Length: 365
Ligand SMILES: NC(=O)c1ccc[n+]([C@@H]2O[C@H](COP(=O)([O-])OP(=O)(O)OC[C@H]3O[C@@H](n4cnc5c(N)ncnc54)[C@H](O)[C@@H]3O)[C@@H](O)[C@H]2O)c1
Image (cartoon, rainbow, N blue to C red):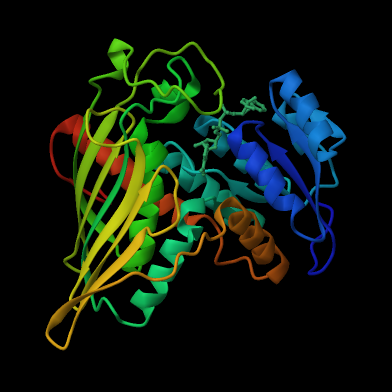
């Protein structure tokens, strides 16, 4: 570990060279006093190209070799999901702060091991929830904080792609390497948004179903997007998931996520909230950010719809900035990965419920 103190230059390594590795690298390079000193990834051509593009000299094929450096303060883990836990635990064991991509891990067991490693190492462990940093989510959160919605008792979170399977034969469609399909890939983003907007209620039960109707027939593939790491796996995960959850304070959260469904979608996500004083809707088409938020209240007896000015928000730049800010604050004890673990536990309970065809109580073994 190179530096610990507030204000000193921060030296970061990025592991993974896909979409995620690129946005993390760009995010860090925008922050004064942060240097991305090393990259790791399996594709030699991408490694060379990214090294040249971002001016990074230390390039590694294996993540273990990157972690063996003795001048790093932090790493971003931007690899397929099955590597998040082993890389994070090894990095924390070397005294580094860790930012993992979402989902934090494939299973609760893995995520709990990561949290234990962060607590033991007394280092920061965070998960990248970039869509929470959107302008519409942040604006709505301020309305909620001012009491405009009252007590929020219902949320519906959805991320729906019509033809959006991210590459048959890539790690994304392997149960072993990804942990699941759209529920763990996309659902975790909107689950995060809903929990954040609802004020982090505890989820006590989940009841879910999953389907694999298109992937196994080679249909529903995404025709655009970044090429993903190919592993030769078949289609082993769901292509649609739906879940109903109860919160400890009597609220309800429903979650739907699809990579492939014959519905009126392209690549659309959002959250709908009902509260005792008002409702709200974030409705995003194909990653747009303008005119996505509406708030519904009653004033002087009349229904009123408020459309706040659109703000783009920060995305991954805000994620890396907040990670660096947390490290620099020196106050690390509240950042040991518990938020990511909570989301992994809920997703895992959804898969268990779907597999067993019954409602699952969180906390059950
Ligand atoms: N937050 C977001 O918006 C967002 C978007 C896309 C992906 N992600 C997440 O980011 C992660 C990566 O996704 P992606 O789309 O960039 O995948 P990808 O397949 O494009 O890239 C994966 C990278 O990991 C590298 N890698 C795999 N095994 C390795 C090893 N043993 N040592 C070193 N490097 C290794 C590969 O070489 C590749 O460069 C996933 O967890 C995914 O869920 C998040």
